[in-house]
Image (cartoon, rainbow, N blue to C red):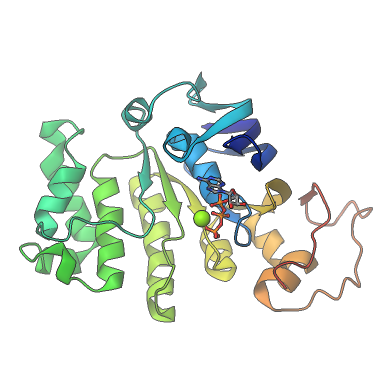
Length: 268
Ligand SMILES: Nc1ncnc2c1ncn2[C@@H]1O[C@H](COP(=O)(O)OP(=O)(O)OP(=O)(O)O)[C@@H](O)[C@H]1O
Ligand SMILES: [Mg+2]
């Protein structure tokens, strides 16, 4: 469905934020992107949503395709038309507008006939938002604002939803709730999701596949459950075992994790 091939991104004249990154998001799957601060996760989303230019960045190599068509030369509005929708970073709801008005603003580009259907489904997914539908969005709690930001993106009935650290700054219970919502959107709406997360344990629990970025390069990719069990991910993200005692790289029965480069201990 989404195919990222050999993508490199540079900001300004000299900052190489991504180098030859390739991976796919298959139809109907949740793929998470893990990596420490500055690894290039947000840059990757900007490359997909065609918003690099707003940050003085550009693709210097590679291509991005969606449903078999190249999208890396399109402008942001055309990407939205492809139903590739990003939940903005840091929530960014319209604080003075009501919850309902925020949702309607999210659906402006959608087919008018489908808008009320979409809104009803979103209120089913987020009963809390329905209870507060007339309240100004600025009065919602942080967790509720995140739900609203997700709901607003869902108004466009995305085929692919891009989420940039939806659990950032939320309490543990709410992080788990965000994880459930990701799974619900995926299973009930059939939406594919590219989930950027620093909370690796939540992300790996709700994803089918995962990739790990390290300073702009793809370091690991594989099945999420298998990655969660791997020594590298355990040591770097999950605080578990991972003394490096089992070198499974030559073992044909070992999980199929592609090790693109050796991980450093920057996040440990
Ligand atoms: N507008 C910009 N101009 C110049 N350099 C930038 C710009 N935006 C990001 N960078 C650099 O690109 C690299 C990747 O940044 P990016 O924001 O993609 O990382 P990230 O993985 O999302 O990090 P975080 O977890 O902190 O959000 C970093 O070195 C960052 O300093
Ligand atoms: Mg980021």
